[in-house]
Image (tube, rainbow, N blue to C red):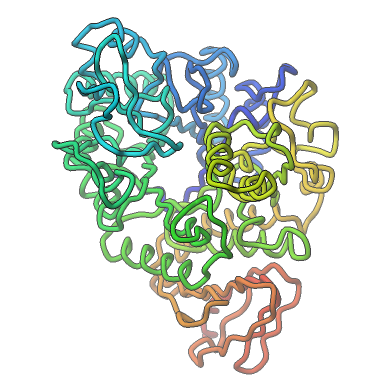
Length: 551
């Protein structure tokens, strides 16, 4: 497997990145126009969420044809141009492969509905009574995970939206078809792949009711998932490409195995446990303040576990499915700039490959919508109805959506202070956050102390210093809920990283072994380092480097 330790990936949600033709929807031409911006930032790979032909019921994650570009985004010619223009700038294109399910508009599923048994075996159909689903499993978007087809007298499984039918990976023909998709895009010059919820592809041999939960314990990290990933990698030759798996409700043990180079499955893994520390009783739609001790413990467990097991983390705070991290775990008002920088440093300086989600480098915030008509996300609309049915008031339901909706990460990229944040000259498919006049790329490109400039420094440091890209990690201040602190070591290189997770000043006692360390990066101009005490200002981050001894 190739080494991607000093690389940085930037994620684009094409629908919201840049609209080139005024139809209000971002497109491939818009991404091409902004490649210079991305090159100047210093990123190595550009991950696009799906741009394939799709009914767009789940914003492209319901794929109707894996080898065609949806006209809303452009053409195959423009995709080829994007790949070529990216290569010229040293940026490899990564595509998002949704291989757990297809759209019900896919040709395979249409043939299945028409009664062709060969294609029914491409999916998971079960015979049964129309009043009794095969199991009590719940869809991750709300409601049952099964849909009845009267004409077939069968149910089909959809772990996500009803229009997203799960594929049957036990069928060798399905696996062959998906390999052909990978080879098609490899031939086009794509340099990497992100695999959507890939740890769900192997379903149990026996389908039964879940009397303890929603069914996920039966299909997460299933019995043949490692076997299938090895086969996919081996038969498509993608072991030298960057590959990342999105892992839903996964385990550390499995992620070590997925990303261990000797296993030849994936380069790295996304896990989401650290983004559930503000879920009350594990429920995404029940709000609570982030549990900082839980966050620290999760980071330590996963960093140390992956290090000891030879696995590799994909480091991230934000993506198209998550609220904006500065609104969630920072302070978007009084300490907006400081907390955005601290949150960036806290993961970019860990062991793993960092991912930047569009606008994260600007400190973009949640949308703060105040009416349900402003939302577009199918999950959010479903849960708004569910929350009302549970007895929540409209105001309570909207407060929850404002904090949790995936639309928070899907608002238009804030390019400038012009109308619609410079995203489009037309009517945007979703409203921009109102603060775009203050928070935008144009303003930050001109500001030496901007959040974007800080991200550039972090990217540069990763490329310059082995201690960041391949050094070991060890945590300290473990019992202090306010401080996320760790040490990076590589041969004679050593670094100390201190992050104040709070809006209050706090103090760290310096270890005597830090004598001779000097600050090389921080989000405050002056840091208070006196004798053996380091006083961290609100949301302060400090990177201390061991200086070479004088000869």
